[in-house]
Image 1 (cartoon, one colour):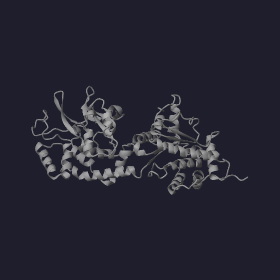
Image 2: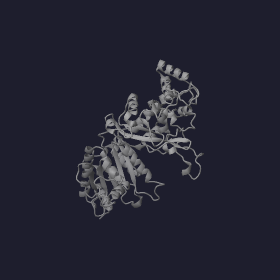
Image 3: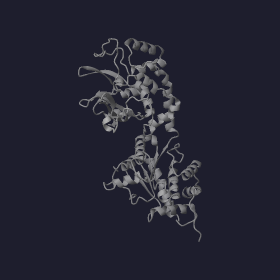
Image 4: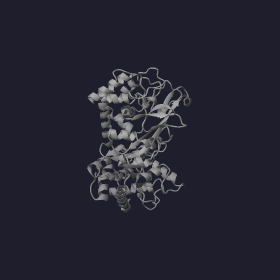
Length: 493
C-alpha cells in the first residue's frame, strides 16, 4: 500500500470542485495560491458584492490543512470567524460553512483524493472530534452548541458584530461568567477574523486594530498564536475616500495664505477689508476670510475689556483652546494645510488605521497624547521631539473654518464659544462635544450639526440626534497643565 501524497497548494481547485460542484473563480484560486505561498493573509480584500467573498472560508480552511503539521510554526489560525452586521449574510455564510463541514465529514481521511487528504489533515488537529465544527452566532437563535470544547478544534463561526465583539471583550451575550474568558481567548488567539461590509462596522474594525496592537510587543513577551483580521469591502473604499480628502485639502491649501503674517494681531479695519474682499469675489479669498474668521471674532463682537487698544478684536474659542506659547498660529495653520494629493496615504492612515503618532509635524496641542507632564517622566520632556499623526492634523486644520461660534455671557463676562460647547461647571475649563454622522453631508449640514444646542447639554439627547443621522457623540475637555493647555482624551457619550 502506497502512502498518500501530501496536500499541496495546487490541490485547491480540486477540493473546491469536490465540495461545490464547480471550479473556483480565478480570483479565488489566485488568493488561495497567494496565501499558501506567503503564509499570511492580506489586510483587505476589495471585492464587490456578488463576487463570492464567502469563498474566503474555503481558502482559510484549505490554508489550515496545508499547515496542520507545522506545529508551533503554523501561521494558519485554527478558527475562522466570518463577521458581518447583517443577519441574512450570516445565515448564507453559515449554510456554506455547513456544506464544507458535511463534505469533510463524509470524506475518507486515509483516501488519495485531495478532499480526503484535507479531511485527514484537519482530523490531525481535532483529535477525536470532527474535521470541522461550524456555528452561527446571532440574535434570535437558540443557545449555540459547545464549539468551545477544545482550542485545537478547526472551527468556522458565522456571526454578527455584536456577538463576536462582546465575546472578544469578555462580555459575551448569553455566556456564563466562567466561560467568558474562554470565549475571549478563543477569539483573541489562533483566529482569523473575516470582517465583511467593513464600512458598516468601522468602530469594530478600530477595536480589532487595537486588539492586534496589544497582542504584540511590548505588551507580550512570548510569541503569540496566529491571529489576523481581514476586511472585506467594496473596491478601494478607503483609498477613494483618502484620495478625495487629500485632493479637497489641496484645493483649499492656497487659500490659507495670510500674506506672510504669523501672529493673530489683525485690527478691526483689516478684518473689514478681508470681509469685503471675500464677499465681493466669492472666490478663494472667501475661504481665506473663513479661515481668519474661525479664529477671530467678527468685527461687531464686543471688545475684550482687558485689551487696552480699542481697535483690537477678540480671538475665537479655537485659539483660546491653544497652548499659550503658540503665538505663531497663522504660520502653523499655513504649514498644516499645505496638502497635496500625494498625502492621500497619510490622510488614510488618520481616518482608517490605528494612530501610531510617528510623524514630525506641526502640532496644536489638540491631541491628548501631546500632554507631556514632567511629573510623569523620568527626565524633563521639554527637548523631546513631538510626534503626532500628520494626517489628522491636516484634516483638523482645514476643518477649523467649519466650526460655528457665538458670544455667550457667563457669570457676567462674555465668552466666545463654539456652538455645541459649554463651560464645565466645577470642572474647570471648557468641554467640547461633537457628533459623528453616518452618511456624507454638505458643509451647511455639518455646521448645523456642530451647532445643535443639545450638544452643549450635560447629557445630549441621543433620540433627537439620531433623527438627524448622528450615530455617536464624543466629548473632550480642555485642561490646563501648568502654563499650557491641552485636551483630555475624547470619551463616547
